Image 1 (cartoon, rainbow, N blue to C red):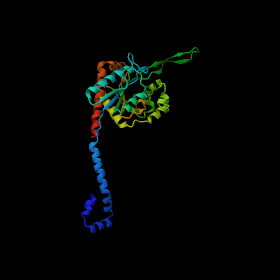
Image 2: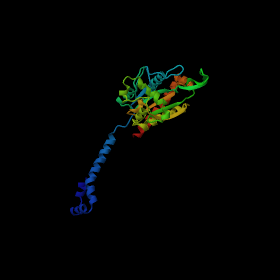
Image 3: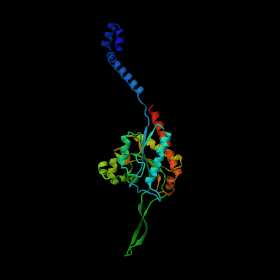
Image 4: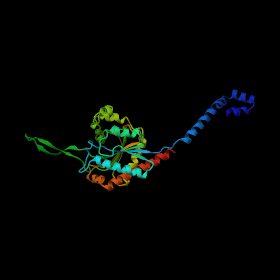
Length: 307
């Protein structure tokens, strides 16, 4: 193009311009290159396939012999599976263009690394792990007695708070050391795996240093994960649930996710009222609606921002 333009200029004028104005020489050389880059960029943009959320992995927490967390009459692993199955059907019914993959559809044990491995292998767009919360059982002083010598001694008993309630949703990250109860409880599933030290590169779920090391493997999709988690908490609140917020923790099931990934605690199985709610048909349906709406909102925002 520049050759054509310069051919239209008198030879004497052209030589003076090239000799006396260095900028002209740069333009003469660079403009065709810039034009080519612009045309290539335009061509690439115009044929690029817009981003769409096509596959969602739903993970029902625990399962099989990993099922110690329980309330008065039910187990976390069973509630999580029931909600996961219903959520999968709800997504398929309302988001026709989305494929749902379950990490488990029965009461079986699936190692944590395999759960996220399923999502990574199929290049899923979202990973959602469903769990029930529980307050830790603690040894507390319930009174005092006397020993054989008449000395005062404390009497202990195991106690668990039954009043704590609400929902919270986690993303991969580093949490405060005084907020590690969930991390220890969820990551202890690793100990049920035969080769857990090889599977998790020497990770010990009871070792504070291991928890810190795991936190360094932060999910690369942190912002997107927080956004999805926030939408979930918003929906829980609209349904009248107690909001315990969005939190970052060193959770093994999320650490190596190759997509936005969250772990949502749908209520406290240690709270009798919430245990009843999470086991009821109405309660489970409401939780599923909350999660479905959050996914729909996230999907809409994610796909719009890519246009």
